[in-house]
Image (cartoon, rainbow over all chains, first blue to last red; front, side, top):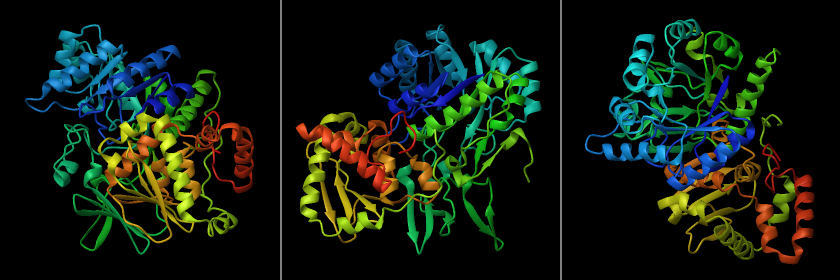
Amino acid sequence: MEIVCPAGTPASLRAAVNAGAHTVYCGFADETNARNFPGLNFDRTEMGEGIAFAHGHGAKVLIAINTFPRAGAEGIWHSAISNAAALGADAVILADLGLLHYAAQNHPDLRRHLSVQAAAANADMINFYATSFDVKRVVLPRVLSVPEIAAINAETQVETEVFVFGGLCVMAEGRCSLSSYATGKSPNMNGVCSPPSHVDYREEDGVLKARLGGYLIHSAAKGEPAPYPTLCKGCFTAAEKSGYLFEDPVSLNAEQLIPQLQAAGVTALKIEGRQRSASYVAQVVQNFRAAVDALAQGHSMPAGMLARLSEGQASTTGAYKKTWR
Amino acid sequence: MQSAPFEIEKAPPLVAFALRPLPLPLLSKALTALTRSVAGRHPSMFRRLGPFASARFVLDPTDLPFVICLSPDATNPHVILHRSPQHGDAKIAGPLAALLGLVHGAFDGDALFFSRDLVIEGNTEAALALRNAIDDAELDIGAELQAMSGPFAGPLRRAIILAQALTGLCLKRPENGGYC
C-alpha cells in the first residue's frame, strides 16, 4: 500500500522521503491550501526543488490546492494549478467543482485527486467526479467505517485514499463554519482553521487557558495534555456539566486496521499533519512504512509508538470502528 | 529510531549553577554573533519568518537563571539576555532540553505543546512562524559554532560531543534524524 505523507516545509519533504514515504503532499504558501499557516508551505522555487528531490529518490509529490476559491479571486487558484503542472507535480488534490473543471480543461494530463474537503462519501458521488473530471483518486472523508469503504470500492474504479494518522475533523468535511464563526476566517476558503492570529494562550496558576477570537474554548489544568485551539475540540459548560461537546481532543491512529483497510480495497494510506515538524513526519512515516512493509511480507503488525505525537496524547480509530457515544 | 522520552529532563543543576555567574553582556554578544552567523548561512529561515522577522521573541529556558530576547531581523539580528522576566511579541518557555531539542529537530513542537513541556504566550502567529522557520532551517548549533571557530573547530567539536554526553542536552543535530 502507498504511504502518503505530509510536508509543510522543504525540510519535512526531505524527511518524509528519507524516512520511506512513497508519496508526499504539500501546498503553496498562500490561501490555495488548507494549511495556510505562518512560516509554512512552499514558494514556487522550493516546490520545484522539492519535486526534483522526491523524484530523484523515487517518490511522488502531490500538491494540495484544496480550498474553495473566493469569488473574484479565482485567478490565484488557477495559477496554482498551472504552476503545479509546470513544476512537474504528480497530481493535484482539488475539492472545488470549478477548479476540477479548470484543471481538466486546461491541464488534462495533470492527474487529479479529489480532496477530503469535497466530502465524497458514496460511490455515486465519486463516480460522478470520475466521469465528469477524470478524477483518478478520492481521499475519503473520515466518517466512514471499514465495511462502508469496502462497499465504495466495490462500486468504483477510482482509487481510494484514507487517513490513518493525525488530527480529526468533525462531521462532513468541507463544510465547517466553527472557526469562521469565532474568527471571521474560513478553513475552507482562507485555508486556516483557528488562525494563529486569533489564538491566545495564557497560563494562569498552572491552568492553560486557550482563547479563539476572544472566546475561552479550553482550560487545561496543570499536568493535563493541551489540545489544538479549535472549537471542535473545545471543552464547554452547559447546565452545570462540562465536556467536549463536539469531539474529544484525540488523534486518529488506524495503524492496527491497515490489514482490514487493504482487504477493503484501499490504495493509499494518508498521514495528516502538514503543520507538524520534520521530526513528526520522520517518526510517523517510519512507523507506517514499517507497518505496510510487515503486512506485505506477511508479518504481524509492529507495535506502534506514536502516542506522544498525538493530540491529547491519546488516539482513536475514529469512524473506522464506530463506537461513538 | 528510539521512542520519544516521555519526560523532558531539566538541565542538570550543575549547568544552571555554572551559568549563574557568567556575565550576561558577554554571553549576549556571543549569542548575537552566533545568530548573525546563522543568518548568513540560513537566509531562507529569515525569509520564512516573513513579517515576524522584526518581532521580539522571549525565549525562556525555565530551568536556567535568565531569559533570552531574540530579535531576528535579517539585517541586524541580535540577542540580549536578562535575569528578570521580559515582555516581547511572543514568549516560548520550556526546559532547556526541550528548546534545544526543538532547534535540532529532535522533538516535535506540537507534541511538546500537547505535553505542556512547551508554553506559548503572546502573539501565537509569530511564535508559530519562528517554530516553522527554525524547523525548516535544520539548524545545528554545534556545526554553527564550529564554523565560527576556525582552527579550533576540531577541538570544539570534541568538546560539544563531550558536553552533550555529560549533560544529556541536545547540543548538535542528531545524525540520521531521531533523538540526541
